[in-house]
Image (cartoon, rainbow, N blue to C red; front, side, top):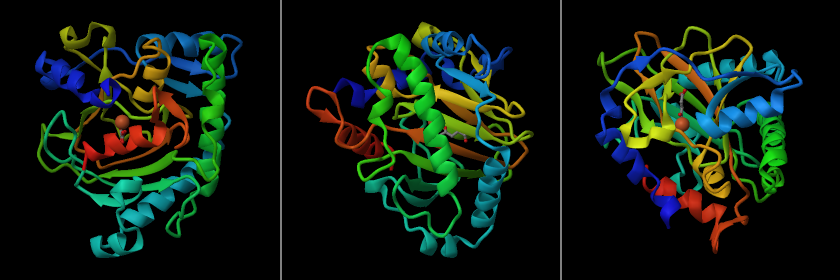
Length: 293
Ligand SMILES: O=C(O)CCC(=O)C(=O)O
Ligand SMILES: [Fe+2]
């Protein structure tokens, strides 16, 4: 399946010079969800750079802060404790992994540890269910906005029920090891929409500045934390579903001298949902997991 092989074009872009290029000026647009022009601004960002930051999103800051506290508490434990508390089940895209995700673009493991909780599954004793609910609600709202422009029914494809495979991922990049290294290799996300919660002071996220130029592009752009904002990006599943109108853009996490915590919510179509021919959203995600662990 062409869409499952998305990483081939990623490699082409990196061979084209993007891999080692530094970040230039600029940052993705900020979309104020309380403004009357929000739908147009969202559409504009999603069809050009594929990255944006939303403000006035309605998720209580205390909810987000609580999830970061949970993440810090979890990651502070000894490695064996984390492994025992949340065994990694790659086939189900959940549990705790340590320095084990190899991005096809780099061939070496990301310098990070992460804990993945799948909607509807256990939260390993962590208080994360309410952020999952809030994030799912916001992702659906954003997809509803896009749906109104796209004319394709996408917002109802994600539930929080039995069939869900949407995922909350807590990420921790330890204090800098090798200067110049990349913390997370360049990749595109697999799902429909990703919400990325960042902490002020924890910089490093970058996306390709000119995604429409593909392999000819050789610049990155910082996606720095915005107070009260959540970074949003389009994933491959939605790019595919929209016939390429919505852009799934390359991004990476650059090494900085600061330790980094972030939280991603990957809104993915339900397992049984058919996204192309007879390819289900479940089969699609499974194929992408296989290429990464
Ligand atoms: O930590 C980040 O900011 C980015 C994480 C990311 O891109 C991912 O896990 O897909
Ligand atoms: Fe990502």
